[in-house]
Amino acid sequence: MCLIAFAIHGRPGLPLLLASNRDEFFDRPTQPLQLWPLPSGKRVAAGRDLQAGGSWIGLAEDGRVAMLTNVRSWPIEVAPCSRGDLVTGWLDSKADWQDWITAIDPACYAGFNLVLGDLATSRWAWLSNRAVGASGPNEAGLPPGWQGRSLGPGCYGLSNAGLDTPWPKTLALKDALARHLSQRAHADETQDLLQALRAMGEAHDDSLPRTGVPIDLERRLSSAFVHAPERGYGTRSSLIVHAGAGSLVLQEWTHQPRVFAERPGHWPLHHSVPRRLELDWTMPKLGQ
Image 1 (cartoon, helix red, strand yellow):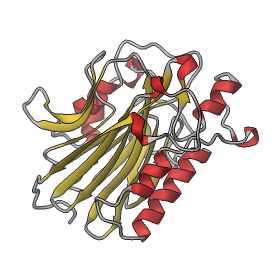
Image 2 (tube, one colour):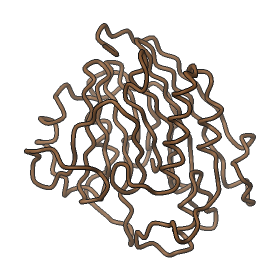
Image 3 (tube, rainbow, N blue to C red):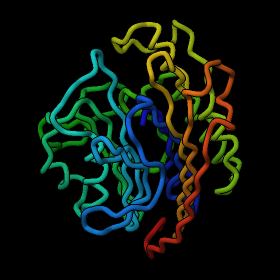
Image 4 (cartoon, rainbow, N blue to C red):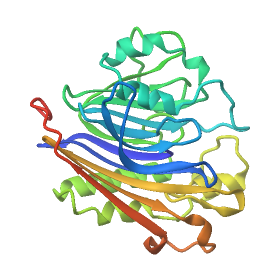
């Protein structure tokens, strides 16, 4: 997952609104959004990485939420542990996030951003194993190797640097999410968010981040919807999550970028497969 905008209690009765794109190599085997059991038997709504077994974003039936992005580096890092296991590990745990991270060695993973949440308790945190800027002050007392902080109500953006790093595509998606919230749109009214996720316009060179990748790739990665078929890489899926008081609506579009060689203003949806999960997971404290 490489681009996320999310709002925690963006308006009354809406504990979480999320819009995201997952970018990945085309040949990495993946299962789309579906319900599947974690080792404890707890159900989770998520896509699944069939190469390493984890996920990039998911919501568990007890209200736990996890979101993952990589921290961009060049050359690509190799590490002994899969970052996707952090997502499923949190979803399958019952511990508070401060206790949960004490059992994890962040040095075993390539660079990551991890947002952990619990809809039932309204406790949220952003965490990373890299010192990446624009993320605000660190929480006191974090174990060695961890960066991060608790999150309160608000609108946040995350790509492949620290939380709320003002990359152009991150700012654009946050703005789209804020407008959507101001319109008090319902769960089925997602066209504006989907339009923002499908945007293929590249940032001007003077606005590009400098993450160490070649400049031509930096340009390609600067659009919300990434399309780099010559590298076998791009946006594989888009996800919009509307978590109301006691119900979850998840809408995913899985894309087939191999079949489209041109670069229009927005990715054409006739090359995408829509999926929808509507789940009545009643949690008495949800959103309170």
